[in-house]
Length: 224
Image 1 (cartoon, rainbow, N blue to C red):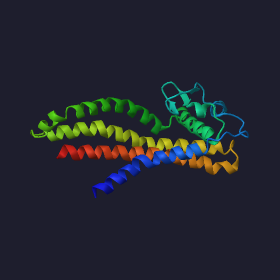
Image 2 (cartoon, rainbow, N blue to C red; image 1 turned 60 degrees about the vertical axis):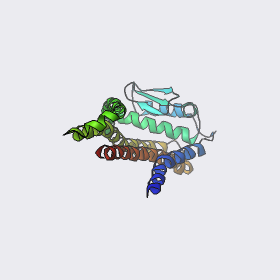
Image 3 (tube, helix red, strand yellow; image 1 turned 180 degrees about the vertical axis):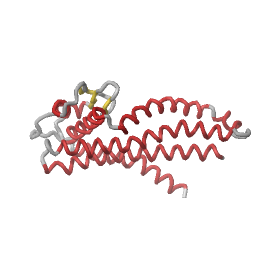
Image 4 (cartoon, one colour; image 1 turned 60 degrees about the horizontal axis):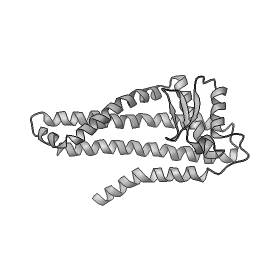
């Protein structure tokens, strides 16, 4: 049973990320028939949709939209790339910029939760370093309740951020990026674009499951 759980955990944590990397790489071939790069498409979409004050920058730290600096950031291969993966990723990040521009509630909630989660992570680190003290505390009256409350605040906040992230990512991909891509990508490339967006979505699902499982693991440990 223990081995089965390990295999299941590895499947949840590793396979979606490996699959996503394979899918993105599969569609990174340069396309001469595409009119622009990922960055050029992002800038064009922002202008066309009237999303003002949002810039597009190159980054080495993963594709993302930064709501604080109002910036779409793309890795070099997607910023300069003229491929299906590049334009699909760019459209997805622009989808987040559109969400922010329209005041999409789940995105705003995630942004606030991320700030709370950063503080909760520090609490989680302290919680782990204080394990010997916590072992003694749980033997005291009411101590177990205090420790469990600390664990829920720390790891539960991180799990909540991941769960709130799911609708944000799915909306950016399938309600915003995909309809836009239909206007710029040839019809025969649309299944590939959907494939890229689906693969990336599964990585967020896996991260959410991992976070929830981590919370459950700590609760089980602390209750022993």
